[in-house]
Length: 51
View 1 (cartoon, helix red, strand yellow):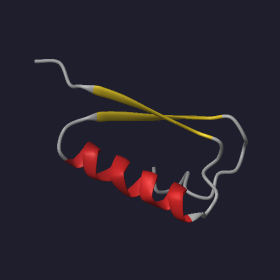
View 2 (view 1 turned 90 degrees about the vertical axis):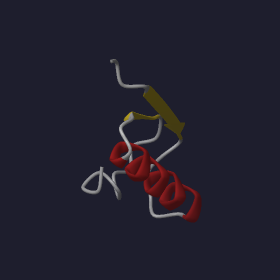
View 3 (view 1 turned 135 degrees about the vertical axis):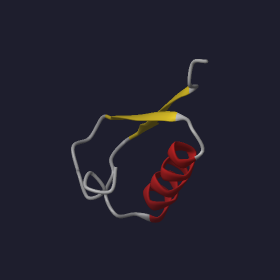
């Protein structure tokens, strides 16, 4: 059975509230079996370690 894949598109992963929420959602989805990837179009890697 193939795992579902999700692509999250955001401007950056700096430590703002919406980025924090997106990271928390992505981590939860990974825990329940989804493959989650990020596409970022402004470089800022505050959450890179968490992901």
